Length: 268
Image (cartoon, rainbow, N blue to C red; front, side, top):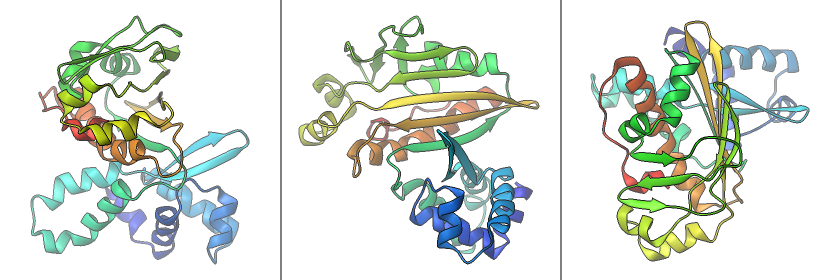
């Protein structure tokens, strides 16, 4: 947490966060072009922000894209905003809102968190229905082999479709799968009206990838949910749902607490 406050204390680094808040998923070249800073200075500031986990990066071919990461701000909000007068913590609350709710200009969701566990234990938490039902409210029926179908059991609905499949499975390092189908049964169980369901269903099917990387006594988990078109209603919905799901996952693995599943509307 000290690293986060140190990173936010510098106005140049806050300017970089503002730039990413306005247009997420920028390369180093794009960030330098939009700011009155030398390339070397931008690189150094990005390194500090990355060390504080306020910025995460994703490789796209030869390019490295930079994204805001809400995980450390969530931790600050959980520890401080609920303990002290909200007025005195308004700056943190505003930053938390910006990171979590501002739609990304790159049509994908990217989130990185560090969990004090082992890669094997985290993999189990991502794939074992006994775990997923506790922090996600979803049970998966699959053998988690590449190409295998994935059946979702969620909110009383059983969601099966030939296009719901495992795309890649490399335990305990990488897992990729297609997102669920927006069926009428799912909508009824989740409290989604038909108009919203139809809007979701009209979009191309998206893809979720979990990357697990050992980081000392912890595991670095990066979640990339992509395949959206600009203005995606599904992307707007999952931007609110994933931070809560991943926060619950971290809490469950680190404390063993039973935590409530996210609200259905945020799990689209």
